[in-house]
Image (cartoon, rainbow, N blue to C red):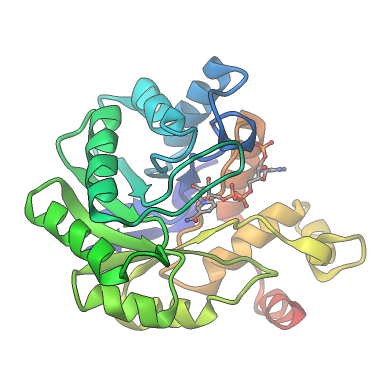
Amino acid sequence: MSAAASGTLTIGDELTVTRLGFGAMRVAGPGVWGPPADRETAVGVLRRAVELGINLIDTADSYGPHVSEELIAEALHPYPDGLLVATKGGLERTGPGEWPRNGRPEHLRSACEGSLGRLRVDQIDLYQLHAPDPDVPYADSVGTLKELQDEGKIRHVGVSNVTVEQLAQARSIVDVVTVQNRFNLTDRSSADVLAVCERDGLGFFPWFPLAAGDLAQPGGHVDEIAAHHDATPGQVALAWLLRRSAVMLPIPGTGSVEHLEENVAAAALELSDDELEQLEAAA
Ligand SMILES: NC(=O)c1ccc[n+]([C@@H]2O[C@H](COP(=O)([O-])OP(=O)(O)OC[C@H]3O[C@@H](n4cnc5c(N)ncnc54)[C@H](OP(=O)(O)O)[C@@H]3O)[C@@H](O)[C@H]2O)c1
């Protein structure tokens, strides 16, 4: 079993990664707050992900906060060649499940410095602005990432939770190489943003990729297709994403090795054209 079955995506014309990534939000404690109940398991999940051929790990300073980045460094530093650890800044944490936005330049600067230290690197390969802050002009937040790139602290810039208009605005300020928006079988509201990424060759990281909702209920389309492939609904949801677009790089997250292995196995699940059509029509 290998994530390599998902194929590859080249980010920013130079970083080629396997198209099935890993989201490291779920290695923190419940509510993405504090340390995990079992640190050894969390470290084991991260190491197993890389063993299984995953070489893009998505994290953020706000996961824990800090816990996810610290665990990644503990598990994997010095990083193997070709491993891309992508992090994000722009959210704060005030408690479990609370994520206030902060896109002020001074916050983004200190967030980036913190991530550099926790990840133990001199430069972050891919730094993503976690979300636009309605209280701060988006141009000011994106402009700060451009400055950090000019200073050598960031190699490539990505954005997250953006509209088509916000993506265009960001790209007028800095070269944006990836977008990370919520997208799955039951929530395709970012299809317009995905279309821009496809047209212009930007990577698209769909977050919450495993959601299959009612489609996974017994008798639903996903359930039937899953049964046909002797797979789980979650695996069908991932296979559908991988098939949906060549710029798609799902980042399913888990704190369990068993779930990780199940998710990686989805890289080899090939949906027929007919199944794809059924899933396209279903949501
Ligand atoms: N940019 C943003 O605003 C944003 C927002 C949310 C997430 N993200 C990123 O996207 C990644 C994925 O998002 P997500 O974690 O919300 O959604 P997800 O990957 O679709 O779902 C993760 C959830 O599904 C469970 N799970 C995973 N594999 C499973 C399996 N094989 N069988 C049963 N349950 C399974 C996990 O629990 P267990 O731990 O028990 O397996 C966890 O509760 C995050 O890790 C993060 O990197 C970004």
